[in-house]
Image 1 (cartoon, rainbow, N blue to C red):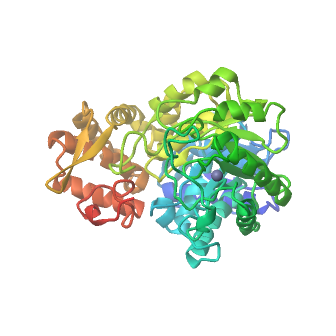
Image 2: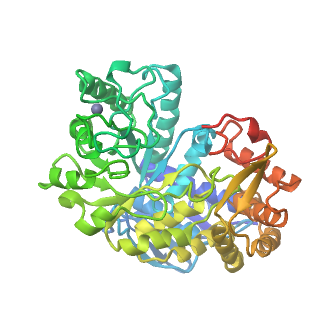
Length: 558
Ligand SMILES: [Zn+2]
């Protein structure tokens, strides 16, 4: 069998275009068995031509017919070309030896400028443990959906300074992730907690996390107790020195944005810092933002308002007062909340400073722990309902990701930021067609709806054995039967890929648990084991990230 298309690329292509071309060929070879031949060696074939067309917006693309059966994929920049290739791949059909582009022709560009993703690299989750080559491939595959910015956080609380060998090893991994993004033309960022400290931070300078005073009703969530209080003599200097050291550690990658966070972890509840979000936090964030812009002159600052007014009051109102004249050091506000809500203050009062806003959708942990423990957690209807009241408030966002089991949610978010008027159900259908073939979309979409409805669950323990308590299980048996039938209709390569396995195992586990009243049968154990291997979760934290196998009971918890 031989391909009916050949591939032509711009002469003297820049290295980013070369890597994007390699990504296209990698995916075609994976699905069809071989990559496309080059146009030079196969002049008789219909030609697929990659090109840059600066008349398009930088992030826009166009798919245009050329000649009898030829197709041009043009991007306004290498990044636009990357998104055009994503569209080409999603519209195409795949068979052994045959790559068939779809019929769609036209141009498209993103509505929202900042379409990010945040990879949490901790607790021995997939981002923490997977081989770096897999991480690199994943960054590339995600970008095909329109993602343009990748963020990681260097969590320092368990290291004794930046020179700690464990800290250095984590830096290598974080930089590999960011470099994978840079290599295909994306932007990168690191996130920091404004007052975070190392494990050996000076005890006398540490932040207060206690509540019941200075307006604090509750202790700030997840405080590590090694954070530093900027109101202590010499503490500001220490924080800024360690912060600058971190910024410089990423110099060879080149940062495009910085995230400055108030809480979770972080914060100080002392009388001189409270209320943290409108006081101590802002006193730190401004010099941190200015230092970032000094080291990365084109860089932009995203100030997070995460958990403002959760533990105390007056943080939103204080920020609005502080930003009454639009600050020159802050470019975006990050605004969101966990679960089913969006902060009401900016909806009622507008965004402080009139700044553009980005969201932080939670796609990983919603109503199911351990996260991803039963496989995929598709949440398109939930995400749609969160976005419906936001109208056009947003300029983009950064979904919070703990692993690969929520891959479909990442595609839904990326396409929402690309075109907020596109229903999430349409993105789901695109995802299913691209990953598993147009012939399975309708029944598989129905099974997805069942998986989403039946997601809420928790573990209960009886006589030392774990049991899964499902809040709903209607339709679980039917969804599993659908998945088993579709499994037989997939090409072998697709049937074996992790994107299918996480969906397949989720449907199997739900049907098994619905029939066993939540008891973990041998079939459940086998599914938990396979998920553990897919996630590299052999050392993941019990209760949070380790699938709930019998073996996981021996793992450390948070
Ligand atoms: Zn303080």
